[in-house]
Length: 276
Image (cartoon, rainbow, N blue to C red; front, side, top):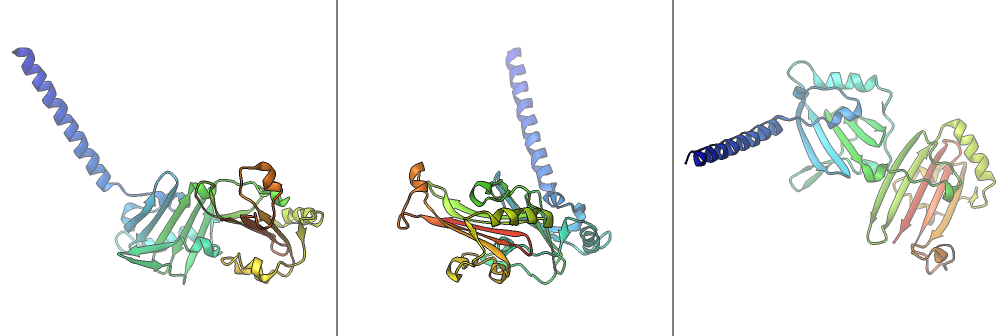
Protein backbone atom coordinates (compact mmCIF):
# COMPACT_ATOMS: atom_id res chain seq x y z
CA UNK A 1 0.00 0.00 0.00
CA UNK A 2 2.81 2.31 0.96
CA UNK A 3 4.62 1.60 -2.33
CA UNK A 4 1.44 2.32 -4.23
CA UNK A 5 1.14 5.74 -2.56
CA UNK A 6 4.74 6.55 -3.46
CA UNK A 7 4.15 5.47 -7.05
CA UNK A 8 1.04 7.66 -7.33
CA UNK A 9 2.91 10.59 -5.73
CA UNK A 10 5.83 10.26 -8.14
CA UNK A 11 3.38 9.98 -11.04
CA UNK A 12 1.59 13.17 -9.96
CA UNK A 13 4.91 15.01 -9.54
CA UNK A 14 5.99 13.98 -13.05
CA UNK A 15 2.66 15.18 -14.50
CA UNK A 16 2.84 18.47 -12.59
CA UNK A 17 6.47 19.05 -13.64
CA UNK A 18 5.69 18.29 -17.30
CA UNK A 19 2.68 20.59 -17.22
CA UNK A 20 4.73 23.37 -15.64
CA UNK A 21 7.47 22.93 -18.27
CA UNK A 22 4.90 23.22 -21.05
CA UNK A 23 3.43 26.39 -19.53
CA UNK A 24 6.90 27.95 -19.15
CA UNK A 25 7.80 27.05 -22.76
CA UNK A 26 4.57 28.57 -24.08
CA UNK A 27 5.15 31.70 -22.00
CA UNK A 28 8.71 32.26 -23.21
CA UNK A 29 7.73 31.56 -26.81
CA UNK A 30 4.95 34.11 -26.52
CA UNK A 31 7.34 36.86 -25.40
CA UNK A 32 10.19 35.84 -27.67
CA UNK A 33 11.01 38.49 -30.27
CA UNK A 34 12.27 37.50 -33.70
CA UNK A 35 15.81 38.80 -34.27
CA UNK A 36 16.68 37.73 -37.81
CA UNK A 37 17.07 41.42 -38.68
CA UNK A 38 20.35 41.31 -36.74
CA UNK A 39 21.80 39.31 -39.63
CA UNK A 40 21.58 42.53 -41.63
CA UNK A 41 23.91 44.30 -39.21
CA UNK A 42 21.11 46.26 -37.52
CA UNK A 43 21.10 46.63 -33.75
CA UNK A 44 17.61 47.47 -32.51
CA UNK A 45 15.68 46.63 -29.34
CA UNK A 46 12.41 44.81 -28.78
CA UNK A 47 10.60 48.07 -28.18
CA UNK A 48 11.75 49.36 -31.58
CA UNK A 49 9.54 46.80 -33.36
CA UNK A 50 5.85 47.58 -33.63
CA UNK A 51 5.14 44.24 -35.29
CA UNK A 52 6.78 41.63 -37.48
CA UNK A 53 5.33 39.15 -39.96
CA UNK A 54 6.81 35.77 -40.85
CA UNK A 55 5.71 34.90 -44.36
CA UNK A 56 7.69 31.70 -44.47
CA UNK A 57 10.49 30.15 -42.47
CA UNK A 58 11.90 26.67 -42.96
CA UNK A 59 15.26 24.95 -43.38
CA UNK A 60 15.53 26.23 -46.95
CA UNK A 61 14.21 29.78 -46.83
CA UNK A 62 13.18 32.70 -44.67
CA UNK A 63 11.18 35.83 -45.46
CA UNK A 64 10.05 38.35 -42.83
CA UNK A 65 8.91 41.95 -42.59
CA UNK A 66 9.53 44.14 -39.54
CA UNK A 67 7.61 47.39 -38.88
CA UNK A 68 9.44 49.88 -36.67
CA UNK A 69 7.59 52.13 -34.28
CA UNK A 70 8.21 55.83 -33.97
CA UNK A 71 7.65 56.32 -30.31
CA UNK A 72 8.84 55.25 -26.84
CA UNK A 73 12.48 55.64 -25.79
CA UNK A 74 13.56 57.72 -28.77
CA UNK A 75 12.98 57.65 -32.47
CA UNK A 76 13.59 54.11 -33.77
CA UNK A 77 13.62 55.27 -37.38
CA UNK A 78 16.41 57.76 -36.86
CA UNK A 79 18.59 55.25 -35.00
CA UNK A 80 18.14 52.56 -37.66
CA UNK A 81 18.75 55.06 -40.45
CA UNK A 82 21.98 56.20 -38.76
CA UNK A 83 23.25 52.60 -38.56
CA UNK A 84 22.46 52.01 -42.22
CA UNK A 85 24.14 55.25 -43.31
CA UNK A 86 27.30 54.24 -41.42
CA UNK A 87 27.40 50.68 -42.81
CA UNK A 88 29.41 49.81 -45.90
CA UNK A 89 27.08 46.86 -46.55
CA UNK A 90 23.98 49.02 -47.12
CA UNK A 91 23.58 51.27 -50.16
CA UNK A 92 21.09 52.71 -52.64
CA UNK A 93 21.94 50.27 -55.43
CA UNK A 94 18.66 48.61 -56.36
CA UNK A 95 18.40 44.85 -56.68
CA UNK A 96 17.66 43.39 -60.07
CA UNK A 97 13.97 43.19 -60.82
CA UNK A 98 13.56 39.44 -60.27
CA UNK A 99 14.84 39.95 -56.72
CA UNK A 100 12.67 43.04 -56.10
CA UNK A 101 9.58 40.95 -56.85
CA UNK A 102 10.26 38.84 -53.75
CA UNK A 103 9.59 41.72 -51.33
CA UNK A 104 5.94 42.38 -50.47
CA UNK A 105 3.35 42.35 -47.69
CA UNK A 106 0.11 40.41 -47.56
CA UNK A 107 -3.04 41.85 -46.01
CA UNK A 108 -5.85 39.33 -46.24
CA UNK A 109 -6.07 38.32 -49.88
CA UNK A 110 -4.39 41.50 -51.06
CA UNK A 111 -0.68 41.46 -51.92
CA UNK A 112 0.87 44.87 -51.21
CA UNK A 113 3.75 45.74 -53.50
CA UNK A 114 6.90 47.34 -52.14
CA UNK A 115 6.86 51.14 -51.90
CA UNK A 116 9.99 52.08 -53.86
CA UNK A 117 10.26 55.75 -52.96
CA UNK A 118 13.13 55.71 -50.43
CA UNK A 119 14.84 52.33 -50.15
CA UNK A 120 18.21 51.06 -48.93
CA UNK A 121 19.58 47.66 -49.93
CA UNK A 122 21.67 44.94 -48.28
CA UNK A 123 23.20 42.00 -50.16
CA UNK A 124 25.87 40.07 -48.30
CA UNK A 125 26.70 36.47 -47.44
CA UNK A 126 23.53 35.06 -48.97
CA UNK A 127 21.19 37.47 -47.18
CA UNK A 128 19.11 40.22 -48.75
CA UNK A 129 17.59 43.15 -46.91
CA UNK A 130 15.62 46.26 -47.79
CA UNK A 131 15.00 49.19 -45.49
CA UNK A 132 12.00 51.29 -46.44
CA UNK A 133 12.88 54.65 -44.88
CA UNK A 134 9.54 56.18 -45.82
CA UNK A 135 7.39 53.54 -44.11
CA UNK A 136 9.94 52.38 -41.49
CA UNK A 137 9.95 48.73 -42.56
CA UNK A 138 12.76 46.20 -42.71
CA UNK A 139 12.45 43.35 -45.22
CA UNK A 140 14.60 40.27 -44.59
CA UNK A 141 15.09 37.49 -47.15
CA UNK A 142 17.33 34.42 -47.15
CA UNK A 143 17.13 31.30 -49.28
CA UNK A 144 19.74 28.58 -48.85
CA UNK A 145 18.88 27.01 -52.20
CA UNK A 146 19.58 30.27 -54.01
CA UNK A 147 22.82 31.02 -52.23
CA UNK A 148 24.46 27.73 -53.17
CA UNK A 149 27.48 28.27 -55.40
CA UNK A 150 27.15 27.15 -59.00
CA UNK A 151 30.48 27.29 -60.79
CA UNK A 152 30.06 28.39 -64.41
CA UNK A 153 33.75 28.44 -65.36
CA UNK A 154 33.55 25.26 -67.43
CA UNK A 155 30.58 26.60 -69.35
CA UNK A 156 31.51 30.23 -69.85
CA UNK A 157 35.28 30.24 -69.52
CA UNK A 158 35.00 32.83 -66.72
CA UNK A 159 36.04 32.22 -63.12
CA UNK A 160 32.74 33.08 -61.47
CA UNK A 161 34.11 32.63 -57.95
CA UNK A 162 36.03 35.90 -58.14
CA UNK A 163 32.98 38.15 -58.10
CA UNK A 164 32.54 41.36 -56.13
CA UNK A 165 28.76 41.01 -55.98
CA UNK A 166 26.37 38.29 -57.06
CA UNK A 167 22.61 37.87 -57.35
CA UNK A 168 20.93 34.55 -58.04
CA UNK A 169 17.38 33.63 -58.91
CA UNK A 170 16.51 29.93 -59.28
CA UNK A 171 13.15 28.45 -60.13
CA UNK A 172 13.53 24.68 -60.39
CA UNK A 173 11.27 21.67 -60.03
CA UNK A 174 10.19 18.35 -61.44
CA UNK A 175 12.02 15.05 -61.72
CA UNK A 176 14.84 16.52 -63.80
CA UNK A 177 15.00 19.77 -61.81
CA UNK A 178 14.07 21.81 -64.88
CA UNK A 179 13.32 25.50 -64.65
CA UNK A 180 15.13 28.80 -65.00
CA UNK A 181 18.28 30.38 -63.57
CA UNK A 182 19.24 34.05 -63.50
CA UNK A 183 22.79 34.86 -62.38
CA UNK A 184 24.35 38.31 -62.25
CA UNK A 185 28.01 38.71 -61.30
CA UNK A 186 29.78 42.02 -60.83
CA UNK A 187 33.59 41.99 -60.94
CA UNK A 188 36.26 44.48 -60.01
CA UNK A 189 37.90 46.45 -62.81
CA UNK A 190 41.09 44.42 -62.34
CA UNK A 191 39.26 41.08 -62.64
CA UNK A 192 37.31 42.46 -65.57
CA UNK A 193 40.46 43.02 -67.60
CA UNK A 194 41.44 39.38 -67.19
CA UNK A 195 37.95 38.21 -68.13
CA UNK A 196 37.94 40.31 -71.31
CA UNK A 197 41.29 38.87 -72.34
CA UNK A 198 39.91 35.34 -71.97
CA UNK A 199 36.74 36.15 -73.89
CA UNK A 200 38.77 37.56 -76.76
CA UNK A 201 40.27 34.09 -77.25
CA UNK A 202 37.11 32.10 -76.57
CA UNK A 203 35.35 31.04 -79.79
CA UNK A 204 32.03 30.55 -77.96
CA UNK A 205 31.85 34.29 -77.23
CA UNK A 206 31.40 37.06 -79.78
CA UNK A 207 31.11 40.86 -79.86
CA UNK A 208 28.19 40.44 -82.25
CA UNK A 209 25.04 41.41 -80.38
CA UNK A 210 22.43 38.69 -80.04
CA UNK A 211 19.07 39.33 -81.65
CA UNK A 212 16.27 40.92 -79.63
CA UNK A 213 14.31 37.67 -79.41
CA UNK A 214 17.14 35.96 -77.54
CA UNK A 215 17.90 38.97 -75.36
CA UNK A 216 14.22 39.23 -74.42
CA UNK A 217 14.95 36.36 -72.02
CA UNK A 218 16.49 39.02 -69.76
CA UNK A 219 13.09 40.58 -69.14
CA UNK A 220 14.10 41.43 -65.58
CA UNK A 221 17.46 42.83 -66.71
CA UNK A 222 16.50 45.52 -69.19
CA UNK A 223 19.94 47.09 -68.82
CA UNK A 224 21.29 44.24 -70.96
CA UNK A 225 19.65 45.84 -74.01
CA UNK A 226 21.56 49.08 -73.51
CA UNK A 227 25.06 47.52 -73.32
CA UNK A 228 27.35 49.33 -75.79
CA UNK A 229 30.48 47.17 -75.47
CA UNK A 230 29.78 43.56 -74.73
CA UNK A 231 30.51 39.92 -75.41
CA UNK A 232 27.70 37.47 -76.11
CA UNK A 233 27.29 33.71 -75.68
CA UNK A 234 24.37 31.52 -76.76
CA UNK A 235 24.00 27.76 -76.77
CA UNK A 236 21.18 25.24 -76.85
CA UNK A 237 21.01 22.71 -74.00
CA UNK A 238 19.54 19.23 -73.70
CA UNK A 239 18.43 17.91 -70.34
CA UNK A 240 19.01 14.15 -70.46
CA UNK A 241 20.68 11.42 -68.43
CA UNK A 242 22.45 10.30 -71.60
CA UNK A 243 25.90 11.92 -71.33
CA UNK A 244 26.60 11.43 -75.03
CA UNK A 245 23.34 13.05 -76.08
CA UNK A 246 24.07 16.09 -73.90
CA UNK A 247 26.84 16.93 -76.35
CA UNK A 248 25.29 15.53 -79.52
CA UNK A 249 21.68 16.51 -80.09
CA UNK A 250 19.63 18.21 -82.79
CA UNK A 251 17.87 21.55 -82.46
CA UNK A 252 14.55 19.72 -82.21
CA UNK A 253 15.88 17.62 -79.34
CA UNK A 254 17.01 20.68 -77.35
CA UNK A 255 15.13 21.23 -74.10
CA UNK A 256 16.27 24.80 -73.55
CA UNK A 257 19.13 27.22 -73.92
CA UNK A 258 21.63 29.36 -72.04
CA UNK A 259 22.79 32.91 -72.66
CA UNK A 260 25.80 34.79 -71.37
CA UNK A 261 26.26 38.54 -71.76
CA UNK A 262 29.33 40.36 -70.47
CA UNK A 263 29.27 44.16 -70.13
CA UNK A 264 32.85 45.28 -70.77
CA UNK A 265 32.23 48.81 -69.48
CA UNK A 266 30.70 47.81 -66.13
CA UNK A 267 32.38 44.38 -65.71
CA UNK A 268 29.06 42.63 -65.17
CA UNK A 269 28.22 39.12 -66.32
CA UNK A 270 24.57 38.23 -66.98
CA UNK A 271 23.72 34.56 -67.27
CA UNK A 272 20.38 32.99 -68.17
CA UNK A 273 19.61 29.27 -68.33
CA UNK A 274 16.30 27.59 -68.96
CA UNK A 275 15.07 24.07 -69.59
CA UNK A 276 11.48 23.00 -70.04
